Image (tube, rainbow, N blue to C red; front, top):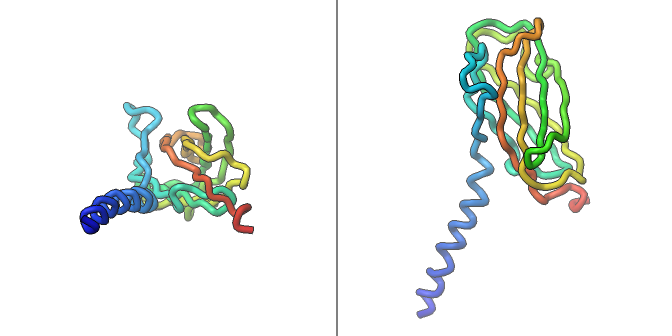
Length: 156
């Protein structure tokens, strides 16, 4: 009887622990802003580390992409929404986020940032446009991410 009760609780605990660990390694689903557009830069995926993001701690977004033409420079325009409501935008020099010039083939755009400890936990959407030096839109994607309840304020 004791063994049956033990097995009854182990399976749900194992399932719960897998649900907590697996999202840490999974890249986010990427959606193109315009599904019919033929963007010059194709995005293979986005990796978020850590996932979920912890408030007040560094978070890194790594975007794997490929291009058929060299890119001398440009910028990234980023918009963030919280539960569908626009809350923040910023612009970054493309060459600060990857090596320029970007050669034909695969490349990674990587951005790290510490979100303030007061950032509300929950679901966010990031929309990113990549523009070349002539302001031609190379790609436009969006993906969801989650900010957890953890905060470095509590660690201090």
